[in-house]
Amino acid sequence: MGLKGKKILLIIGGGIAAYKALELIRRVRERGADVRAVLTNGGAQFVTPLSVAALSENQVFTDLFDLKDETEMGHIRLSREADVILVAPATADLMAKAASGLASDLATTVLLATDKPVLMAPSMNTRMWEHPATQRNLEQLRADGIGFIAPGAGDLACGEVGTGRLAEVPDIVRALDHFFGGDGPLKGRHALVTAGPTHEAIDPVRYIANRSSGQQGYAIASALAALGAKTTLVSGPTQLAGPSGVDMVRVESATEMLDAAQSALPADVAVCVAAVADWRAAKPVDKKLKKSNGGMPSLELTENPDILKTLSEPGNRRPPLVVGFAAETNDVLDHARQKRVRKGCDWIVANDVSGDVMGGAENEVHLIMDGDEESWPRMTKASVAQKLAEKIAGALSPQ
Ligand code: C5P
Image (tube, rainbow, N blue to C red; front, side, top):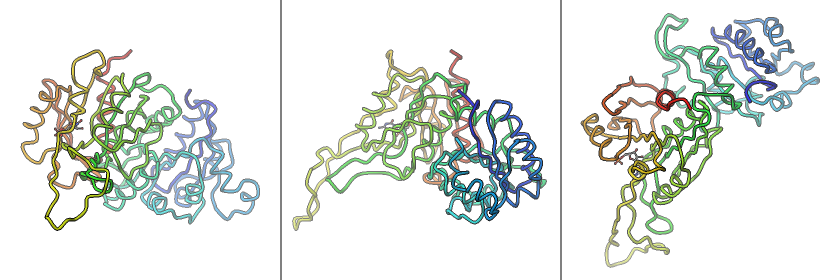
């Protein structure tokens, strides 16, 4: 498996990094894929249709209202004939239009009309990337099922330094290759991820829950899958679409989550990101509780199983690497170190949730390992996921 024989529709957005699309076309074709390109008006300011056509050895599509193209190949057919659509560079403008479903030119029309998977490789100035509007669009597009090839950090063409550089061409090729089931460092491995909140029924209409959005866990599942792992994501109720290439198991309560996690074993790595409710109603009732004149109903609680602790218990089904999360509001590192020992897991990813982390797009974490610790700078949840997935790939010895 891999890129051989695959049809890629490349949408080239209007950014300085558009020139890298030419190199990308060559590298992807070297691996046996066929490339058709849509060049946006902006993209055509940076590379010419002629060079794209020459390198792809295919006609280049540039304008929605080009009648000749519409008779030979309509935009609907164009959007459906590919195995994957890759947007590189994906500009802030293109992301914003796609996030709101605009169809104002050929590229955005194709993105709206397609029934094929879409991958985006963003590229823009770091402030534009970090702007809440772009981050909001990113989350929306992710929720719509679009995969992302994270931008790198470093010197930008505009002279600033920060995150926003188009991923390097080999990274984009690797991401595409993994997408098509090519070899990644986690190929042959099974990863289990828990994510989201749990809902604990009180009666048929009421439940105990928390504010977890599931974003971080979904991003981790997606990053592990992108590195080639067969990935099972056991998720509590969230608003998010299952990431592409991940086996989703949707559950409601902590007990269901534990059952689903245990049924997914054996796994080479388990990453417990779910914000499991600590308690559930001791006696959930099957009829809606009524307001009575006699005052409040009393709610008796009982403790939920600890999924992380259970998966960490020694035994032949224990995954060789078990990773937990610690959301703390104070003394983050101390609490996390204690938690690692108490839960019996191998690593703890600790974060400070006193700010806007829950539901927000960014996270600042510390990785607590046995005798070693790393503090990572504040970055998007997608970047935390990617870094953690790479760390996991490095820790699992080659098979
Ligand atoms: O004890 P605390 O909830 O702070 O621990 C957080 C870590 O434990 C997270 O990795 C979370 O997914 C996991 N956990 C669990 N089952 C529970 C409670 C927490 O897996 N019942």
